Length: 209
Image 1: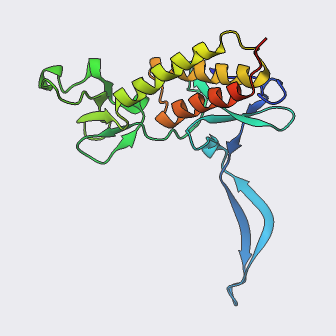
Image 2 (image 1 turned 90 degrees about the vertical axis):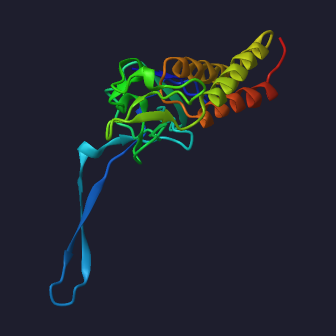
């Protein structure tokens, strides 16, 4: 797996890990006569339920040795990371929502048959794992494609600009989002927009060499 950017945008230290949440049961004792409960001071942790914390844009958060945290894009093998991705695809028949890796089959291997598609119809991304019907992207692909194109164009504004830490972070974030989107990873339109905003914020602090 590969996290981008891997260095802290504030202090440039390498990340030391993901910020995770772990569910637990805070134990208490109940008085059988009065029904009053009092905590025992012990919590049993459910380590099987440990998951990476994500921000409002569905991006995993890393932290550095100095306590800073920042959002990143995950690339490559995602099997080592436990995270609840926000739904990016939805079934057109039942109420199932999820991500593309959860589909029963992608479009190329669909059991529904590509011949069922009619000219001008919305193109599905694969088969629903619950009922087997077509599943579709929740956000329109043309909307994401437009945002990614704008993001790629925005990278040209880095030409002739001194690469201060804020710009390096924005550049890494933008390139990671673009790469992940073209690789088919679940990247929300909000994440693309946030990368665009990072470039704008960084350029406001930019200094021409």
